[in-house]
Length: 264
Image 1 (cartoon, rainbow, N blue to C red):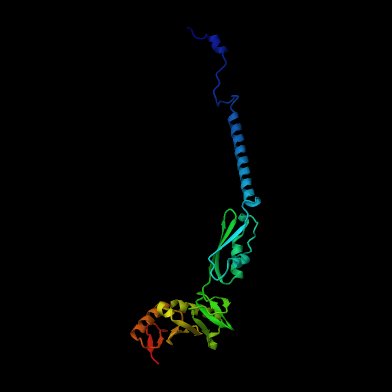
Image 2: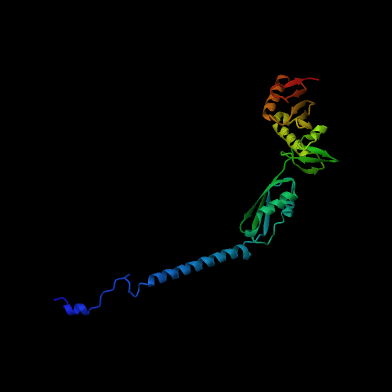
């Protein structure tokens, strides 16, 4: 069969190619892309608005319950009262740092508290209470002192197994450099450095100055400890000396490189 004549070839319109300028469909692609982008942005905005509403506007994620863990002497009610967590407020907007600060400020027995959200409705307060390592007489009661030398509570009954701390300060010991708070920290550090077998028998620590701390045991044995410095060396020296001189009732490890023992 013969092909088209030359006249027919000139009369036939040129075949359009996609993507070429002048094509009637060339602008459809960008228009569709812009339309899809607008739809996606609208969907993202709607989703973001929904999330904000769920977190801050709905009743689904509001605080309804406060749980307290870790208490020993304190009661959970005391902690929740001190926390004053805003029940009914959106859980997401709750200031956990402010809750923790209120508990620590109002309950000196609390050393620290970790506040965390428990979705969808709860707040958890993990409490760490201070533990007394020494007590001081205060009127008819006893003031408890923790391992950091912090006085945190006064109780009517002396805690069992906690040594009594006496401050018999020389006038020179009362200075800006060695205030009472500093001396309490030193006494607590001495208490922590005592050998385990000695710590269990300790009934009293007496502080006369920064570098004059003595320890009295339940059997009448006394130990001149000196300052809180070189605690490990002093503990080793005391343990060795007690084994070497078992009948002694006075030990001096204030200079751990030259300890001494004597019997009255």
